[in-house]
Image (cartoon, rainbow, N blue to C red; front, side):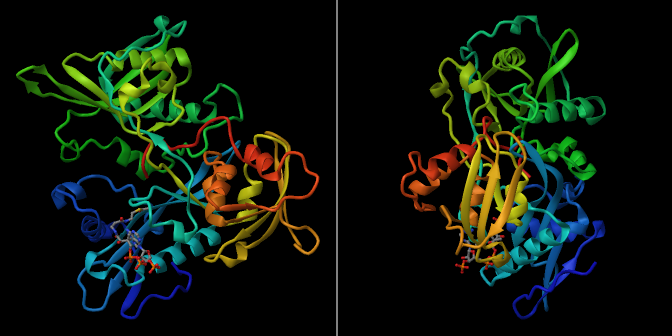
Length: 438
Ligand SMILES: CC(=O)SCCNC(=O)CCNC(=O)[C@H](O)C(C)(C)COP(=O)(O)OP(=O)(O)OC[C@H]1O[C@@H](n2cnc3c(N)ncnc32)[C@H](O)[C@@H]1OP(=O)(O)O
């Protein structure tokens, strides 16, 4: 494999990796992300990596890798009303002895050059620490919802929920892999039941490696909890949703205080969601249900009579980087008619910088052209990072402008400002978010 020519600090060199390098990779990974799990147990679990996208760095006189990054090939990353090829940046790590010498900076240059070579208009990631990726042009594009829901929390009724039944089983790929994949994709493609109105950022586990890693249930990774279980909600024997979960048991003098950690909670409509949550919130010997990652507009936010009682928190979910601004702007749909001229700055990928005219009708294909600012003055100015934040429809251009990250250049005589109109168009009826951390 020939890598783009990206310079490294003196004494360091790039190293391509293969499955035979798994041990090297997990050793570096546990330097970057400390883990109490024994190395042999880590290596006994399937790697989620796509190896030709995993690149290490070696140093003269140093045994093992000093740094690593990789990406997942998301060929169908959901963006508003469409899908785009996207590199899911992952497993970024630098050995503590070699940090703050520019290795991440070099890895990001290589990553973005390889995205461009492969024709990936976007890169997306989950950030281990929020301050890391803005400097590389990534914007915080989605939040997720974390809850601790008391057992038996009251839920509003939904007509038809009582007609559903719920199966509870040990979760295995053999038995449930196809069902989970199908329902997960269906829930992301049309969360409102309307074709074309998708959930941006709802990425699927597209590769065999990601599937194998998702379904692996090695005891070393259970953290004191039981093996993975699944509830499947059905209507007339047809699956309409599922939740993967694990319980813990704790016998206290005051009574049993078990916990339920829920993985993905997916339901195709309100009645299925109500039926599923009703069973999940009433498991014997437990006191609390903690779903891992939910969309901020998940049905549970409206089903719960007392959302506040579930201590809602909204940490950042996916971050997005436009690698090809024109391709990305033309590759999504907009929630209102839009005709706007955007001046975009991009210090890391200067080829992206320019003035773009974006035109689209609501919920239809968009067109984008690079224009000459001498003849078409930009109406909004923003950095590629702010564009990344707004791109999935979860962060409004108006809110970014309120923080000084978007500047409006008003034209005399316009009744409703261009910022208000563009902000509405860049929004989306469904909040963005991924149901799993990649
Ligand atoms: C998508 C993912 O995989 S997220 C996972 C990220 N990995 C981790 O958090 C694991 C632990 N941390 C690490 O491995 C490393 O510290 C990394 C990868 C975060 C940074 O690697 P380094 O090689 O030290 O970064 P590098 O020297 O290129 O620094 C680039 C810039 O980012 C800044 N920076 C790096 N890490 C951080 C951080 N955690 N918080 C704030 N700023 C940071 C540096 O100060 C530097 O700033 P400057 O350009 O203004 O001087």
